[in-house]
Length: 142
Image: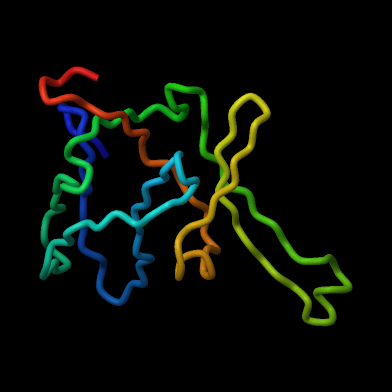
C-alpha cells in the first residue's frame, strides 16, 4: 500500500477470465467539512490475464505522508457498521433495508460521515481504512 518513502501506491492485478471483480474506490475524508471525496487514480490500460501486477504512485496524494497504522495520530479509528431492516415483520412485508455506515471513533466520540453520491446510495460494502495522511513540508519534515 505504501512505498519505502511513505507515499501511497496502488497495485493493479489483472482479473482472471470470466470473473467478477468489484472495483475498489479511494476516498479522502476531510475532517474540516466532515465529508469524503473520491480520489482520482489513473488506472493502467490494457491489463490482460497473464500480465504481472503494476504498481503506481497515487499522484493526487503525492504531497502527503502516509501512515499505515490502524489508529490515527490523534487517536481516531475508522469503523464500518451495518444496519438491517425492521425485523421479521418488515422482512415479511417487504420493508427490509440494509445500509452500511462509516464512522470515525475516538474515546467515545463518534463522527458519522457519508460517501458522496452515487456511492452513498450503493454503499452496501463496508468502508475500509487504507492509511492516515499527514501534511509534509518541502524539506521532508512534518
